[in-house]
Image (cartoon, rainbow, N blue to C red; front, top):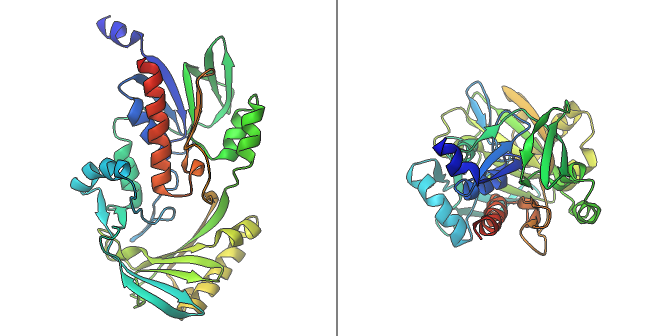
Length: 338
């Protein structure tokens, strides 16, 4: 009974989406409220993602993060101390017309961090202790009698909550909140772009003259020797991203055609026959990136106990997701503490 009394006055908060912004918001609020995250997939981290296949491991979403703010730096420190986040001091190159036009070694100005041993292991560590319900796709969020009622895709009621925080991409947030038409028009204006991730595993080393490269003026925008990151194991593999513009134009094309095109492009640019890869897969990110946004880092409607957060309030970066989630959590914490 005592337990019931101690948490009886705590508000119940539902967060939709277990990407970094949702996870950080949950951690920020865990001492002030009862927080539940609903996540449609079986994992956490959203685009802080890793896919394994046999000996290969691919960070097929976010590639690294370079903390710019004291806030994010401070947040990372415990993960760095415990070895869940490590510096990737890679050899970096820029490529124009198949020629390397710039080469430099990444060092500590600024440090390029990755999750270790995978990008996703960082997200998993952030989620430790957070109450997450997996494989649940929220279909409706309805406000009634001062509470939010959440239902899944089978119209099963998932409980009533004092607050809802939506941390999905804007397109999905619009679908969930049709009753907020003014918010809807603002969200529709926030256009996220797509991206293809090409994952290639090899039986031997390709001896590329870099660990990470930025090809300019091509259909691909990024190449990294994923196996060059710390703690990645020995199996040599490449992670290649298309440009956002090319992915937007070709997102609904046959994936085999996309895969072949990106392999051919990359083979030309890198002067290596990538068709010989022992492992080839493609992942399409429908909502991958967004250009820099103006205005607030999150949305908060205190009259309806509704909030939205995500990297797309700022720009498509890991730090942006952190900042948005942290600040929205802080804002709600302040309201609940008053």
